[in-house]
Amino acid sequence: MNTYLWTQHFHANQHRFTEPDLPAGDCALPMAIALPLRESLAVFQLGESGGGTRLMKYVRLVVSADRLAGYEEAVGLFIAEEQYHARLLAKSVHYLGGTCLEKQWSNSVFRWLRNHFGVEFNIQILLTAELIAEVYFGILYRKCNDPALRRVCHKLLSDEMRHIAFHTEFLRERLGAMPAWRRWLWRGQFRVIQRVTAVAVAWDHRRCFAALGVRPWEVAGMAFKTGERFLRRLGGIQRLWGVRPVQAALAP
Image (cartoon, rainbow, N blue to C red; front, top):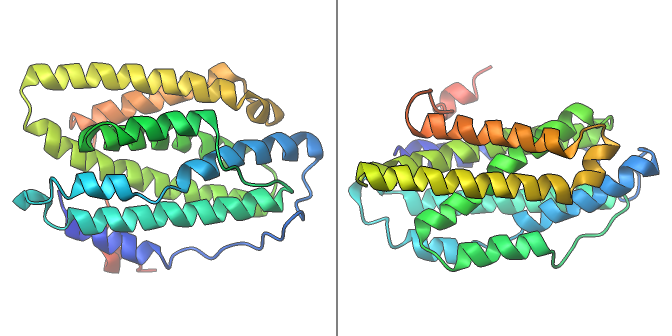
């Protein structure tokens, strides 16, 4: 795993986005769209707002491996990027005239799962959430007519795709050390958890999707395809989303 390249990427990515103006309550979307959208975004905002303490604790148990040198720093930068997403989503919720949440059932389930298992499962739960977020923000980017919110969604979508690649590289390292039967079991349980999560999220956010003209089962179907695409990439059948060297990434 090229942790140095990922560290470069996360540092450079801090300066690649100019936030749009998001004055509180100033969104012009009709209430039939703004209300379910702000309620839905508030849930995702809560999911992005964790401090990452437990994840960093787990990470310190694996960074002694030579191939993972620098992984702790890269994960710290990843967590900082997630926290920036939380702030950006909070502004978006306020822009839509809503308020942020302190607690929500699906977020509580995700946190419980992440806090009671080791680093691989912690990363798996993060990855599951980000695969769902890729579908979610992709839908919002395509279907929402507010230019400022579309810019936010494009930023989040782009970052989530890189996060998926980041976690994929880590899991490839870890799974590569397992016997074939354990990798087979891992893929099976991942597929089940990811699909159950996709159905739950599609149903939980159905009012938002309906307001944007998308049916819940269409969302679940897109999420299933995203999960299968991830598993193909994890197996090396398709090329991973990589990160470019900073100099190339910043070139005009």
